Image (cartoon, rainbow, N blue to C red):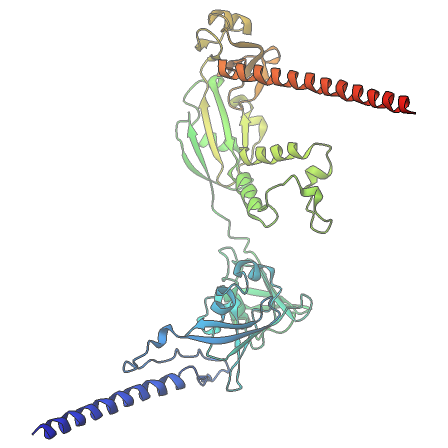
Length: 493
């Protein structure tokens, strides 16, 4: 009876062992076959189709999605070699996702041919990946999937050989390496399509002679090396431009304009005129266009690096010298202040109501116009006994206003009396200024010091004096020692 039980247990043990071995063998076969090159089907039009992702059986006991594969990167990239990438990675992810290249700078500098990135498979096939069509045109099929053992090869571009371009009224002007089999429609997709003001009836091409094609024919045109496409502007389409008017006018709001043609006077008349006496009004035009241009220049490659005082110590090939520095004898620290002032600058245009008609100010898109009320008073601030607002009286001097305010305070600086002009906020010495409505009369103060600071300064002064005395004493002792040494030497002789 015991032998029968043991025989039954042995049979169960052998069956379990056999099933486990079969299970592991199935997993090993799946792993060994995974990662081999997948055949690339071709379309009827000759263009390559996208590689399918590797399929993973649900019976596979291993998590193949977390497995890595080896991909070779060769060519004119700075870091060639073998890289471990996840299964299902694409060419774009390999080149830009593993610190091989910086994506933004590499695409902008255009020194590498990202339109014809080659992928050599283990089966001997050669695939092509167009990363510009993928990144700019959204074509996922141009960003092929890599398999284990694939070789990605990328070459440098020649800026004067076999290039094509599209420019003018498109979203993105492009100058690209030539790509075999590409149509104008493909190139237009990479450029982002036509702008809102494009003339789309005809396409102008230089190759090198000038040709004009209707759009229907141009879309299917096979692009040739050195073709240059120009998209003209439709003169019948005008950009929508507006300005914002606020302040002391009867009808404030947002008004449409013709940029650089509509005058400030026309907008003020359209708004119904002023709500208050024009003699107490000031008109301020904030030029948003100038601000946006300055902001764009700050974002350019040359302006990203802050101005540094070691600029002149760079090599001549690396030196970038602003014109303001090249033609000036100022210290470098002064130029740091100059650029800081540019950052804080506000682009305003000041117009008096009586000068609106004669000034002929033409408005630009997104200008902001403020008609500001200027009360008939001035404001006293700083080291005066009674600061506040005082009526502006013709012929009244600065000293008389200060006397009316109770005189100067005990900490006032007699040389620091300024008139801060209304609207422009310019600081003008009191003896040179003419008081106008809304001006601020400001009396500066002498620097504030505390007892502790005074004591520290006194201690530093005494320490410096003691140091000088000790230095003189050491000099005298050294001189005496030298004389004694000379006398002793002479007596011995």
